[in-house]
Image (cartoon, rainbow, N blue to C red; front, side, top):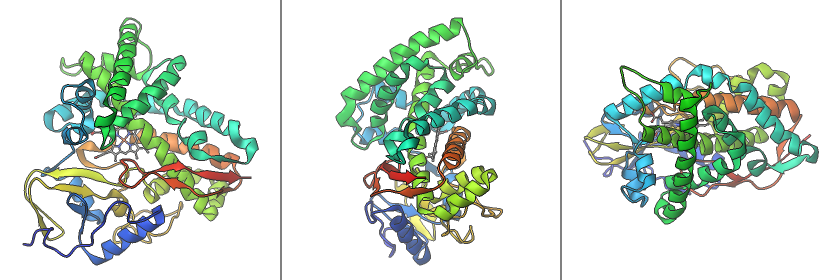
Length: 404
Ligand code: HEM
C-alpha cells in the first residue's frame, strides 16, 4: 500500500481561500477528486464517513500536551498544569474519570435552567443597537454574549464579569500556536482567576447554591471527588472551551443568514424552525473546522498508509458538506430533512465529543430566536473580515450588518 505522502493527493494549505464560500468550493473539489488531501503537517481527512469512523478509532489520539509544548508553554508553569487537567488535552483513564465527574455536575437540567438568562442577555445586547439599524456584530453582539452565560452557569458573581472577560481573553491566548510569547500575561490572568476561585470555592463549600461550582464541589462517585486543583482547571476549561467557540459560531451564523435572506424570511414566518435553523447554520459555517489528531500506530485511511506518529487532521468542515451522505449538502436549507446515518461534526465525536454541545445549542437557539424576532431583514453592510488562516477557531473579527 502506498503511503499518503507518496500518493498524488490535492494539497490544501491554510489561506488557500479568502472566504468561507471559497473554502467550501476547494473542499468540494478535493472530495470529488480523492479519498484524502495532504496539508501542512500530514493527511487531511475530507470525507464524512472517514471522519466519523476515525473519531472513534483508538489508533488516533487527541492533541494531548504536544500542542502546549509546540506552542511554547513552559512545562510546570501554571498554564501548563491547568491545561494538563483540561479534558480535550487528556486521554485514557484520566480523561474518562474527569469527564464522568464533570458530567455528573454539568447536567441537562443545569443547562436548561440558563435559558431565560441567556435570552435576556442577547435581548439586552440587541436593545443597545436596534435603533441604529446597523452595527459591527462582532463587538456589539457576539463577543459580549457567552461570558455572562458561563458566569451564570458556574455561579460567578455578576460584579466580576469584567474581570472574567479579561481573564478569559488572556487564558485563551494559551490556545494559540505562539502561546509562549504571551506566557507572562497568561500566567498573571490564571493566577488572578485561581485566587478569585479559591475564595469562591471556600464560600460555596460553606454555603452551597444551585450552581455548577457547588455541584462540582459536591460531586462524588465511588468515593472519588474532584481535587482542589481539578476544580480550578474545570472552571478554566469552561471559560476556554465555551467562550471563543460560542462567540465565533454566533458570528458565523449571523453571516450565513445575512447571505441567505430567503432563509431569514422563512425563519421569521416559521419560528418553530429555530432549532433546526441552528443545526443547519452550524453545519454550514462551523466555528470548529478541523480536529487535530495523532496516529499512535500505522493506520489505513482512504486506501493509503498513514504511519504511526503522523499528525492527522479530521476536517469536520469538509465532512459537514459531503453530499455522499447528506443530499444537496451544498444548499443552505433550514427546513431540510436529515437522513439516517448523518452526523453533524461541528461538535466532534467519540470520547472528546463537545461536553458543552447542549449549552452551545441553547445559546445559539436563544440568540437566533431573539435576532429573528427583532430584525425583519438582515444584510451584510460592508466587508466582513475572517480571522487569519490557521486560527484555531473560525469566525469573523469584523462583521458589519444592517437590518430593518
Ligand atoms: C458553538 C460552540 C461550540 C463548538 C462549535 C464546540 C466544539 C467543540 C469540539 C469540536 C470539541 C471536540 C474537539 C476535538 O475532538 O478535538 C469540543 C470539546 C469540548 N467542548 Fe465544545 N464547543 C462549543 C461550545 C462549548 C461550550 C459552551 C462548552 C462548555 C461550557 C464546551 C465545552 C467543551 C469541552 C469541555 C470539550 C472537551 C471534551 C472532552 O475532551 O472530553 N464547548 N467542543
